[in-house]
Image (cartoon, rainbow, N blue to C red; front, side):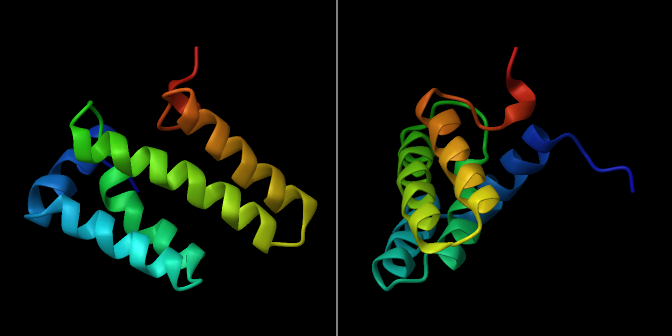
Length: 101
């Protein structure tokens, strides 16, 4: 009902993972196996963390590509637009629409 700030929660999740690169690699494996939506859930464990740690930056780039792929997998126009918009935001260095000026 009263969630912690997303940046704070994401940092704690990232620190609990132990090996964020392994999580990133698992997301890549899922995507390569055609399970893009599941891969997006997994990669968010790393990609949503704030900061510029190299594995986090890579996770955001991979997530952007996964969003583009997913936009081609879904049929509803609104869904396609949401995935494309998410990819564009990530490409521009934004984690969320909430951090836009």
